[in-house]
Image 1 (spheres, rainbow, N blue to C red):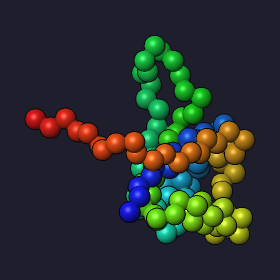
Image 2 (image 1 turned 120 degrees about the vertical axis):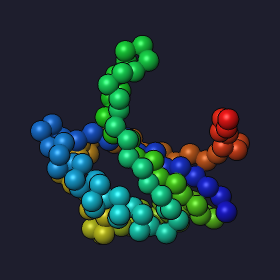
Image 3 (image 1 turned 180 degrees about the horizontal axis):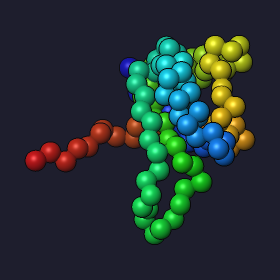
Length: 114
């Protein structure tokens, strides 16, 4: 079955970071994992130290693993759930600046094993 990664980069609304993280960790992740084909999720926060001392315009990253025959089915399910309230957004998330993209592997996962 084809595998994909859904990458979502977000920021909280100023002053609502705790509310944003609570919603994301305790509701949104579960709502997204309820979409058929989405099999795992992990959230990350930008580290304080970066290459070249550059900062990211996004503070949070969510990586979802997707296994589905037809990626368009997952996209349609996400859109449908978002438009019907089955996947509500929080007003603690800065909805004006969200980056979302699906990626597909170009080769095998390579790990350095001792």
